[in-house]
Image 1: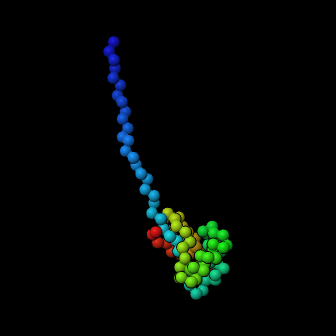
Image 2 (image 1 turned 45 degrees about the horizontal axis):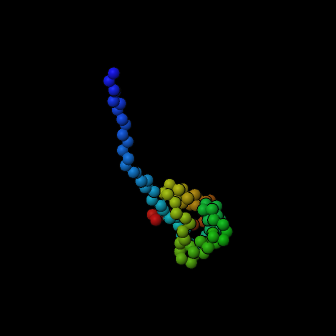
Image 3 (image 1 turned 180 degrees about the horizontal axis):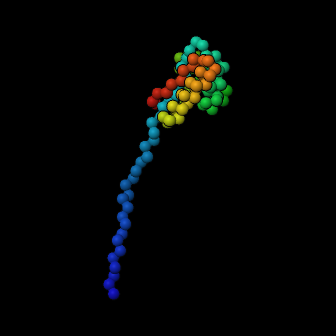
Length: 102
């Protein structure tokens, strides 16, 4: 009786490292027409901020010309920019929302 040598499956143990997706900052830009209260509503509704944090970001937009709403993967950032632009248009405000790579 002969011994039968079974084929062995050898797995390559290379380590793969998942690369996180690039992140994008979503920014609100200041204008002279959009009411401050509307900006606060946008920050609460689309970025999940409480009133205090939304007020701080709104004041940053007002004083510095822009404010960071959050940092997100590209698809989420794009969606947020589109949602804010649509909501602002519906309420006839020129509020601009943009994204830039982090």
